[in-house]
Amino acid sequence: MAHITLDLAHSYKPRPQQDSDYALLPLAMEFQDGGAYALLGPSGCGKTTMLNIMSGLLVPSHGKVLFDGRDVTRATPQDRNIAQVFQFPVIYDTMTVAENLAFPLKNRKLPEARIRERVGRIAEMLEMSGQLDQRAAGLAADAKQKISLGRGLVREDVAAVLFDEPLTVIDPHLKWQLRRKLKQIHHELKLTLIYVTHDQVEALTFADQVVVMSRGKVMQLGTPDALFERPQHQFVGHFIGSPGMNFLPAQSAAGRLQVAGHALEQPAGRGLPEGALQVGVRPEYLALAQPGAAGALPCTVQRVQDIGTYQMLTAQVGEHLLRARFAPEQRLPAPGETAWLQVLGAHTCYYQNEELLP
Image: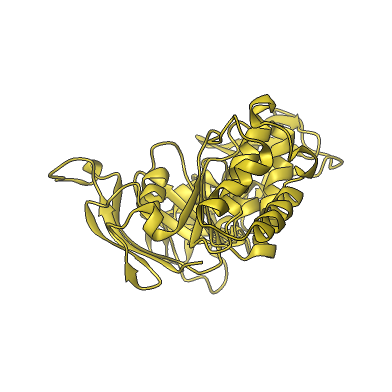
Protein backbone atom coordinates (compact mmCIF):
# COMPACT_ATOMS: atom_id res chain seq x y z
CA MET A 1 0.00 0.00 0.00
CA ALA A 2 1.10 3.57 -0.56
CA HIS A 3 0.83 7.01 0.96
CA ILE A 4 -0.15 9.15 -2.04
CA THR A 5 0.66 12.88 -2.19
CA LEU A 6 -0.70 15.21 -4.89
CA ASP A 7 0.60 18.74 -5.47
CA LEU A 8 -0.62 19.61 -8.95
CA ALA A 9 -3.04 21.14 -11.42
CA HIS A 10 -4.15 19.90 -14.81
CA SER A 11 -5.37 21.50 -18.00
CA TYR A 12 -6.08 19.82 -21.32
CA LYS A 13 -5.27 23.17 -22.99
CA PRO A 14 -1.63 23.98 -23.79
CA ARG A 15 -1.68 27.50 -22.30
CA PRO A 16 -4.41 27.84 -19.65
CA GLN A 17 -5.26 31.45 -18.83
CA GLN A 18 -8.21 31.26 -16.45
CA ASP A 19 -9.86 28.88 -13.98
CA SER A 20 -12.28 27.54 -16.59
CA ASP A 21 -9.30 26.30 -18.65
CA TYR A 22 -8.39 23.79 -15.92
CA ALA A 23 -9.86 20.32 -15.45
CA LEU A 24 -8.20 20.35 -12.02
CA LEU A 25 -7.43 23.61 -10.27
CA PRO A 26 -4.25 23.73 -8.13
CA LEU A 27 -4.56 21.35 -5.18
CA ALA A 28 -2.43 19.78 -2.46
CA MET A 29 -3.77 16.54 -1.01
CA GLU A 30 -2.66 13.40 0.79
CA PHE A 31 -4.20 9.93 0.79
CA GLN A 32 -3.06 7.91 3.79
CA ASP A 33 -1.70 4.37 3.50
CA GLY A 34 -4.57 1.90 3.99
CA GLY A 35 -7.34 4.53 3.84
CA ALA A 36 -10.71 4.23 2.07
CA TYR A 37 -11.48 7.38 0.09
CA ALA A 38 -14.24 8.49 -2.27
CA LEU A 39 -13.99 11.23 -4.90
CA LEU A 40 -17.53 12.63 -5.07
CA GLY A 41 -19.04 15.27 -7.32
CA PRO A 42 -21.20 15.91 -10.39
CA SER A 43 -20.18 14.82 -13.87
CA GLY A 44 -17.30 16.88 -15.28
CA CYS A 45 -15.97 18.05 -11.90
CA GLY A 46 -12.52 16.43 -12.35
CA LYS A 47 -12.92 13.15 -10.41
CA THR A 48 -11.77 10.81 -13.17
CA THR A 49 -8.99 13.21 -14.19
CA MET A 50 -7.61 13.04 -10.64
CA LEU A 51 -7.93 9.25 -10.57
CA ASN A 52 -6.16 8.85 -13.93
CA ILE A 53 -3.33 11.11 -12.73
CA MET A 54 -2.92 8.93 -9.63
CA SER A 55 -2.93 5.75 -11.71
CA GLY A 56 -0.43 7.03 -14.29
CA LEU A 57 -2.81 7.00 -17.24
CA LEU A 58 -2.47 10.80 -17.35
CA VAL A 59 0.52 13.07 -16.63
CA PRO A 60 -0.47 16.31 -14.85
CA SER A 61 0.27 19.49 -16.79
CA HIS A 62 1.59 21.12 -13.59
CA GLY A 63 3.06 19.67 -10.39
CA LYS A 64 3.84 16.16 -9.23
CA VAL A 65 2.58 12.88 -7.74
CA LEU A 66 4.42 11.13 -4.91
CA PHE A 67 4.02 7.53 -3.71
CA ASP A 68 5.60 7.12 -0.26
CA GLY A 69 7.69 10.22 -1.00
CA ARG A 70 8.93 8.88 -4.36
CA ASP A 71 8.21 11.05 -7.41
CA VAL A 72 6.12 8.93 -9.79
CA THR A 73 4.70 11.77 -11.89
CA ARG A 74 5.87 10.20 -15.14
CA ALA A 75 5.90 6.58 -14.02
CA THR A 76 3.62 4.06 -15.75
CA PRO A 77 0.73 2.35 -13.92
CA GLN A 78 2.86 -0.82 -13.84
CA ASP A 79 5.76 1.04 -12.23
CA ARG A 80 3.37 2.46 -9.64
CA ASN A 81 1.98 -1.01 -8.88
CA ILE A 82 -1.61 0.22 -9.27
CA ALA A 83 -4.79 -1.79 -9.78
CA GLN A 84 -7.69 0.02 -11.46
CA VAL A 85 -11.31 -1.08 -11.84
CA PHE A 86 -13.25 0.71 -14.57
CA GLN A 87 -16.90 1.60 -15.09
CA PHE A 88 -17.54 -1.43 -17.31
CA PRO A 89 -16.15 -4.98 -16.96
CA VAL A 90 -12.62 -5.55 -18.27
CA ILE A 91 -12.16 -9.33 -18.25
CA TYR A 92 -11.24 -12.25 -20.50
CA ASP A 93 -14.49 -13.87 -21.69
CA THR A 94 -12.73 -17.05 -22.82
CA MET A 95 -11.33 -17.69 -19.34
CA THR A 96 -13.13 -19.07 -16.31
CA VAL A 97 -13.83 -16.93 -13.26
CA ALA A 98 -10.89 -18.55 -11.46
CA GLU A 99 -8.53 -17.95 -14.40
CA ASN A 100 -9.57 -14.29 -14.59
CA LEU A 101 -8.93 -13.77 -10.89
CA ALA A 102 -5.61 -15.61 -11.07
CA PHE A 103 -4.32 -13.73 -14.13
CA PRO A 104 -2.67 -10.77 -12.28
CA LEU A 105 -0.97 -13.21 -9.89
CA LYS A 106 0.31 -15.52 -12.66
CA ASN A 107 1.82 -12.49 -14.40
CA ARG A 108 3.85 -11.95 -11.22
CA LYS A 109 4.83 -15.64 -11.17
CA LEU A 110 3.46 -16.38 -7.71
CA PRO A 111 3.50 -20.04 -6.59
CA GLU A 112 0.44 -22.04 -7.68
CA ALA A 113 -0.55 -22.83 -4.09
CA ARG A 114 -0.48 -19.16 -3.16
CA ILE A 115 -2.52 -18.25 -6.26
CA ARG A 116 -5.20 -20.83 -5.41
CA GLU A 117 -5.36 -19.60 -1.82
CA ARG A 118 -5.69 -15.96 -2.83
CA VAL A 119 -8.23 -16.60 -5.60
CA GLY A 120 -10.31 -18.68 -3.20
CA ARG A 121 -10.29 -15.97 -0.58
CA ILE A 122 -11.32 -13.17 -2.98
CA ALA A 123 -13.99 -15.36 -4.60
CA GLU A 124 -15.42 -16.12 -1.16
CA MET A 125 -15.48 -12.42 -0.27
CA LEU A 126 -17.36 -11.64 -3.50
CA GLU A 127 -19.64 -14.68 -3.06
CA MET A 128 -18.40 -16.24 -6.33
CA SER A 129 -16.95 -19.49 -4.94
CA GLY A 130 -19.62 -21.53 -6.73
CA GLN A 131 -18.83 -19.93 -10.10
CA LEU A 132 -15.04 -20.36 -10.22
CA ASP A 133 -15.20 -22.98 -13.00
CA GLN A 134 -17.71 -21.09 -15.16
CA ARG A 135 -16.56 -19.26 -18.27
CA ALA A 136 -16.92 -15.50 -17.95
CA ALA A 137 -18.65 -15.24 -21.34
CA GLY A 138 -21.82 -16.85 -19.98
CA LEU A 139 -22.18 -14.57 -16.96
CA ALA A 140 -24.45 -11.55 -16.51
CA ALA A 141 -22.97 -8.03 -16.59
CA ASP A 142 -23.06 -7.64 -12.81
CA ALA A 143 -21.21 -10.94 -12.30
CA LYS A 144 -18.58 -9.86 -14.84
CA GLN A 145 -18.10 -6.61 -12.94
CA LYS A 146 -17.63 -8.59 -9.73
CA ILE A 147 -14.78 -10.38 -11.53
CA SER A 148 -13.27 -6.98 -12.40
CA LEU A 149 -13.53 -5.99 -8.74
CA GLY A 150 -11.87 -9.25 -7.76
CA ARG A 151 -9.00 -8.77 -10.20
CA GLY A 152 -8.36 -5.36 -8.66
CA LEU A 153 -8.37 -6.77 -5.13
CA VAL A 154 -6.54 -10.07 -5.64
CA ARG A 155 -2.98 -8.68 -5.45
CA GLU A 156 -1.59 -8.27 -1.94
CA ASP A 157 1.39 -6.14 -2.98
CA VAL A 158 -0.65 -3.46 -4.81
CA ALA A 159 0.09 0.16 -3.85
CA ALA A 160 -3.56 1.23 -4.25
CA VAL A 161 -6.79 0.04 -5.86
CA LEU A 162 -8.59 2.74 -7.85
CA PHE A 163 -12.29 2.39 -8.70
CA ASP A 164 -13.88 4.52 -11.44
CA GLU A 165 -17.67 4.29 -10.85
CA PRO A 166 -17.44 0.47 -10.70
CA LEU A 167 -21.10 -0.21 -9.81
CA THR A 168 -22.69 1.48 -12.86
CA VAL A 169 -23.70 -1.82 -14.47
CA ILE A 170 -24.70 -3.48 -11.20
CA ASP A 171 -28.34 -4.22 -10.37
CA PRO A 172 -29.60 -1.68 -7.74
CA HIS A 173 -30.19 -4.38 -5.11
CA LEU A 174 -26.72 -5.83 -5.65
CA LYS A 175 -25.18 -2.35 -5.40
CA TRP A 176 -26.13 -2.19 -1.73
CA GLN A 177 -24.65 -5.63 -1.10
CA LEU A 178 -21.42 -4.85 -2.97
CA ARG A 179 -20.92 -1.53 -1.17
CA ARG A 180 -21.10 -3.38 2.13
CA LYS A 181 -18.82 -6.08 0.76
CA LEU A 182 -16.18 -3.56 -0.37
CA LYS A 183 -16.29 -1.94 3.06
CA GLN A 184 -15.77 -5.37 4.65
CA ILE A 185 -12.93 -6.19 2.23
CA HIS A 186 -11.21 -2.91 3.09
CA HIS A 187 -11.34 -3.70 6.81
CA GLU A 188 -9.96 -7.19 6.21
CA LEU A 189 -7.25 -6.47 3.63
CA LYS A 190 -6.22 -2.94 4.71
CA LEU A 191 -5.69 -1.85 1.09
CA THR A 192 -5.55 1.79 0.03
CA LEU A 193 -8.85 2.21 -1.85
CA ILE A 194 -9.92 5.29 -3.84
CA TYR A 195 -13.42 5.23 -5.28
CA VAL A 196 -14.86 7.67 -7.85
CA THR A 197 -18.62 8.22 -7.88
CA HIS A 198 -21.30 10.86 -8.43
CA ASP A 199 -23.62 8.97 -6.06
CA GLN A 200 -23.44 10.34 -2.52
CA VAL A 201 -24.93 7.16 -1.02
CA GLU A 202 -22.09 5.11 -2.53
CA ALA A 203 -19.48 7.60 -1.32
CA LEU A 204 -20.80 8.02 2.21
CA THR A 205 -21.35 4.29 2.83
CA PHE A 206 -18.02 3.17 1.35
CA ALA A 207 -15.45 5.75 2.39
CA ASP A 208 -13.85 6.81 5.66
CA GLN A 209 -12.90 10.12 4.00
CA VAL A 210 -14.83 11.79 1.15
CA VAL A 211 -13.38 14.36 -1.28
CA VAL A 212 -16.22 16.57 -2.55
CA MET A 213 -15.37 18.24 -5.87
CA SER A 214 -16.94 20.88 -8.10
CA ARG A 215 -15.65 22.41 -11.34
CA GLY A 216 -12.12 21.08 -10.90
CA LYS A 217 -11.82 22.21 -7.29
CA VAL A 218 -11.72 20.24 -4.05
CA MET A 219 -14.44 21.81 -1.91
CA GLN A 220 -13.96 19.67 1.20
CA LEU A 221 -12.18 16.55 2.42
CA GLY A 222 -13.80 15.02 5.47
CA THR A 223 -15.65 12.18 7.12
CA PRO A 224 -19.27 11.55 6.08
CA ASP A 225 -20.35 12.94 9.46
CA ALA A 226 -18.34 16.16 9.00
CA LEU A 227 -19.71 16.70 5.48
CA PHE A 228 -23.25 16.38 6.81
CA GLU A 229 -22.93 18.33 10.05
CA ARG A 230 -20.43 21.05 9.08
CA PRO A 231 -20.20 21.53 5.30
CA GLN A 232 -17.30 23.92 4.71
CA HIS A 233 -18.86 25.36 1.55
CA GLN A 234 -22.45 25.95 0.51
CA PHE A 235 -21.93 23.63 -2.46
CA VAL A 236 -21.16 20.77 -0.08
CA GLY A 237 -24.25 21.55 1.99
CA HIS A 238 -26.38 21.56 -1.14
CA PHE A 239 -24.79 18.45 -2.71
CA ILE A 240 -24.75 16.24 0.39
CA GLY A 241 -28.10 15.19 1.80
CA SER A 242 -31.48 14.18 0.44
CA PRO A 243 -32.65 16.83 0.01
CA GLY A 244 -29.67 19.10 0.59
CA MET A 245 -29.24 21.85 3.15
CA ASN A 246 -31.73 24.74 3.23
CA PHE A 247 -30.21 28.20 2.75
CA LEU A 248 -31.79 31.53 3.67
CA PRO A 249 -30.26 34.98 3.07
CA ALA A 250 -29.59 37.00 6.22
CA GLN A 251 -28.22 40.37 7.33
CA SER A 252 -26.26 40.54 10.56
CA ALA A 253 -26.13 43.81 12.51
CA ALA A 254 -25.97 44.82 16.19
CA GLY A 255 -26.51 41.30 17.52
CA ARG A 256 -29.56 40.62 15.39
CA LEU A 257 -30.24 38.67 12.23
CA GLN A 258 -32.65 39.67 9.49
CA VAL A 259 -33.53 36.28 8.00
CA ALA A 260 -35.80 36.26 4.96
CA GLY A 261 -37.34 39.53 6.12
CA HIS A 262 -37.81 38.52 9.78
CA ALA A 263 -35.80 39.91 12.73
CA LEU A 264 -34.27 37.22 14.98
CA GLU A 265 -31.92 37.40 17.93
CA GLN A 266 -28.50 35.94 17.22
CA PRO A 267 -27.76 32.76 19.20
CA ALA A 268 -26.05 33.58 22.50
CA GLY A 269 -22.27 33.71 22.21
CA ARG A 270 -22.26 33.16 18.43
CA GLY A 271 -20.61 36.50 17.54
CA LEU A 272 -21.49 36.60 13.85
CA PRO A 273 -19.77 39.22 11.67
CA GLU A 274 -21.89 42.08 10.39
CA GLY A 275 -23.10 42.11 6.81
CA ALA A 276 -24.64 39.67 4.35
CA LEU A 277 -24.71 36.00 5.40
CA GLN A 278 -26.44 32.78 4.48
CA VAL A 279 -28.12 30.67 7.16
CA GLY A 280 -27.91 26.93 6.45
CA VAL A 281 -29.95 24.22 8.18
CA ARG A 282 -30.52 20.60 7.25
CA PRO A 283 -34.10 19.38 6.65
CA GLU A 284 -33.48 16.85 9.45
CA TYR A 285 -32.88 19.69 11.94
CA LEU A 286 -35.88 21.88 11.13
CA ALA A 287 -38.47 21.37 13.86
CA LEU A 288 -41.95 22.71 14.54
CA ALA A 289 -41.93 25.52 17.13
CA GLN A 290 -44.43 27.55 19.11
CA PRO A 291 -45.54 30.82 17.46
CA GLY A 292 -43.05 33.58 18.24
CA ALA A 293 -40.39 31.17 19.60
CA ALA A 294 -36.81 32.50 19.58
CA GLY A 295 -35.01 31.52 16.37
CA ALA A 296 -38.21 30.39 14.63
CA LEU A 297 -39.82 31.70 11.44
CA PRO A 298 -43.47 31.67 10.33
CA CYS A 299 -43.85 29.76 7.04
CA THR A 300 -46.75 28.88 4.78
CA VAL A 301 -47.02 25.13 4.21
CA GLN A 302 -46.98 24.31 0.49
CA ARG A 303 -47.23 20.51 0.62
CA VAL A 304 -46.68 17.47 2.81
CA GLN A 305 -45.36 14.28 1.17
CA ASP A 306 -45.42 10.82 2.71
CA ILE A 307 -42.11 9.25 1.66
CA GLY A 308 -42.69 6.10 3.69
CA THR A 309 -39.86 6.23 6.20
CA TYR A 310 -40.43 9.96 6.78
CA GLN A 311 -42.66 12.90 5.84
CA MET A 312 -41.35 15.82 3.79
CA LEU A 313 -42.86 19.21 4.55
CA THR A 314 -42.25 22.04 2.05
CA ALA A 315 -43.00 25.54 3.31
CA GLN A 316 -42.46 29.05 2.00
CA VAL A 317 -40.98 31.97 3.91
CA GLY A 318 -40.92 35.13 1.81
CA GLU A 319 -39.57 34.12 -1.60
CA HIS A 320 -37.75 31.09 -0.26
CA LEU A 321 -38.68 27.44 0.21
CA LEU A 322 -37.74 25.32 3.22
CA ARG A 323 -37.84 21.52 3.26
CA ALA A 324 -38.14 19.70 6.57
CA ARG A 325 -38.10 15.97 7.38
CA PHE A 326 -40.39 14.58 10.07
CA ALA A 327 -41.19 11.16 11.52
CA PRO A 328 -43.97 9.34 9.62
CA GLU A 329 -46.30 9.39 12.64
CA GLN A 330 -45.90 13.12 13.45
CA ARG A 331 -48.97 15.31 12.97
CA LEU A 332 -48.15 18.19 10.60
CA PRO A 333 -49.97 21.37 9.50
CA ALA A 334 -51.96 21.07 6.27
CA PRO A 335 -51.09 22.92 3.03
CA GLY A 336 -52.09 26.58 3.30
CA GLU A 337 -51.65 26.69 7.09
CA THR A 338 -48.90 28.60 8.90
CA ALA A 339 -46.14 26.59 10.56
CA TRP A 340 -43.41 28.01 12.77
CA LEU A 341 -40.11 26.30 11.97
CA GLN A 342 -37.07 26.43 14.28
CA VAL A 343 -34.32 27.74 11.99
CA LEU A 344 -31.65 28.85 14.47
CA GLY A 345 -30.26 26.15 16.71
CA ALA A 346 -27.26 24.02 17.62
CA HIS A 347 -27.03 22.48 14.13
CA THR A 348 -27.43 25.74 12.16
CA CYS A 349 -24.48 26.74 9.97
CA TYR A 350 -23.60 30.30 8.92
CA TYR A 351 -21.86 31.20 5.65
CA GLN A 352 -20.18 34.31 4.30
CA ASN A 353 -19.11 34.38 0.64
CA GLU A 354 -20.24 30.73 0.49
CA GLU A 355 -17.63 29.65 3.08
CA LEU A 356 -18.56 28.31 6.54
CA LEU A 357 -17.94 30.71 9.40
CA PRO A 358 -16.03 29.22 12.36
